[in-house]
Length: 219
Image 1 (tube, rainbow, N blue to C red):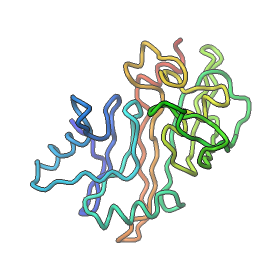
Image 2 (image 1 turned 120 degrees about the horizontal axis):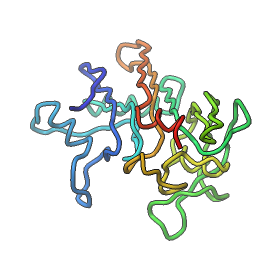
Image 3 (image 1 turned 90 degrees about the vertical axis):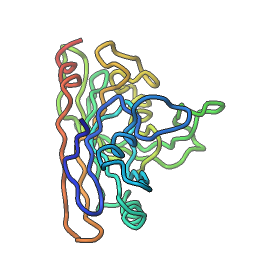
Image 4 (image 1 turned 30 degrees about the horizontal axis):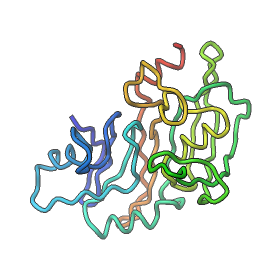
């Protein structure tokens, strides 16, 4: 069943499982979050899917979906401001020595490839801030909290691979892991926003999935 931690007249806050594509497409068969939300809402006539922060198929966690065009516009207007703060938790390969770090590296499409992104001088400005939560010497992995200042496609995955610490199980920018079927160890764990209509500051949290927690102590 679809997990919806919060809903009001303006938006849904969804805790997306992985692997599940966020959006439907004529190129894609099988379940999607868009179809699951349509069913959850009672299959209303004229349903329009309006995601605010999009998550990759292999990323789990919190995602806001607006119920109206106006709410979608207002949430998009604050998406990359202090009024819409997203934090991710990622398990990454190797030992990250710095307790706090900033990755400021432009990202663009990889030439001749519609899926892969890469760090390159011609890319768009991209900034990720990180803080180490825990280091696991027995598995040579590091658990980190990450905050986006920009929202490029695959930003966290590209940035962590760029500094030599790809997200565990990232089959595009690192190596797949057999314990993470079609997903990787990246989770949208916290989303805080100021409600555009009520002005209320709201904060939502989602615990790290068991399959990621298990890899903190297992190879």
